[in-house]
Length: 255
Length: 255
DNA sequence: GCTTGACCCTGACGCTACGTCAACCCTCCA
DNA sequence: TGGAGGGTTGACGTAGCGTCAGGGTCAAGC
Image (spheres, rainbow over the protein chains, first blue to last red):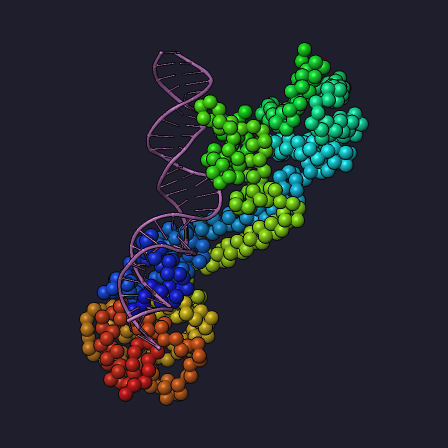
């Protein structure tokens, strides 16, 4: 007759494990001796080893009871099911590994590579850290909504960066962003630059947005983001409106 | 301003998930509106998307907070650690799959193949289902204690099966096992057959057991198993003792 | 003004397979 | 006779939420 500790040791499990199996009814409670100790016979050892063998193979405890009674056909089916579950789980983890591997550094953690590449380019042309972070957060919002469009969008953005006026805009934004003063003349300059770029683009023909770009939420959020980041945003928006444009991202013609 | 449902939808998670992140302090609680509803700005959306991106890559929530603040070096280290965890987990599951694949049918569920092969052979020579099950359980106990020795042991057992007297013993055991009567003459026959085999083996030279076979527990358990399975076991042991052997499995010379 | 359905709130339990106390009892050995 | 090393039950903790229960709120149509 074995005590619970001996039984557990024989099967290579902990005492707690044996008691757990009793609790969930997987292993029947044995007789107790005079002092209340559980006393196990050999058949309990056999049962426990069977359970552990199947459990070690990845079968959830809740199914083991049935499995050990099942006939060949039912068993084959159960095995099939469990195997496919395992395959699925493995694939999930493999995918996680691939993604983890891409989390090499910094922004790459949360952005597709083409976007981080674009952000690097902005840094090269002199955009400040603060503006870069705002830019990055904006792209996070966009990439969350339209991940599949990011490569094409970023290609356009790279092309736009060839325009010296846009670069100039980014630089002025950077300077203003780095100070806290409400320098009205710089805000005017920002508005002029933006309006100039927008007017030119508008004259070249409004790009007709596809059905899938109709969702305003990402752009609302980006506007909100800018407003959260800098208290001078309302003033800039006001200046832009005077120049015939409404908003801060994806601006609309007004007036 | 977003409600919790809108925020969750934007980030592709459930409302419960957002609340959970608040609870564990991963996402800061936002302001409430007049009716007590949480109201989120764009930066909350950005934060939530960052969290999900990293979480989807398999990083445990408890580490995400730190990770999103970490510098490049610490991040690379964390990524390395998580990747190795994932690899480990994947290997565990692969192993499970292999084992699951072997759980094709019946006894193979809990026994190494050479043992099931031996059991099949026993069935072929006419051993009854009941005796087979006892035999199987005994091997489960042995295989649990000395899994690495099973191939060699089974090879010996196969060889022993060539002996017609052993086959005869198994058949008588089967007949007796299938009835409940305490047929004394059959019990005597069993004892005679066993004693004969043992005497021959003893005369041929006692196999000296290696250090690792010293553990008596598996054999005690097997004896116990037989006793549990059949009430006539004590009588058989008694008959065996009269013939100079003690026990039922791994018998010892006495008297 | 009233209903209805879709939201929101907090609080709490459930899931898996045990690990890990706490507080106490039993046995064995020097 | 005392202490070490078993055993007992009961309860909470783990990860990441799902899923009630039992409320309050909002927007819209009647």
